[in-house]
Length: 124
Image (cartoon, rainbow, N blue to C red; front, top):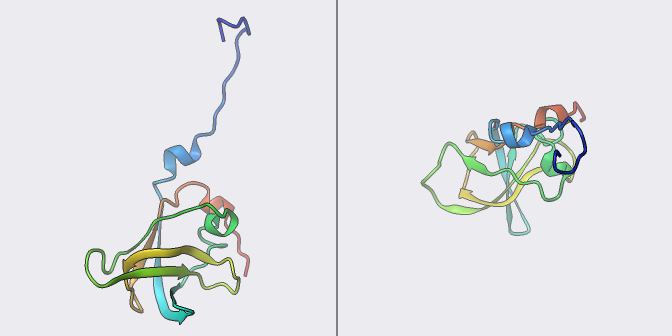
């Protein structure tokens, strides 16, 4: 700024995602499994619109999901984690490789610290 003779300027930045993006975790419980057209769905007790809306709003949004009940053992498959709302976009993650969850297993949706709460709604 000094070299350009622009005078004194104020630089403001909003580094929310950079600072706290990795700080949040959403824990969900698997309510049931559903097989449809060779896809295995783990249907959980939360919805994207009211908990972690980024995957429903932004097509490129990704939140890693792990099966806390079976982290390093069990047969691994590609799992789609679906929410409990009656919407086609209510999907936390598609084709995530993890040990096959069972009813009652706890899954962790990682890196939910930035904007997830402020973007969420009480929709549906």
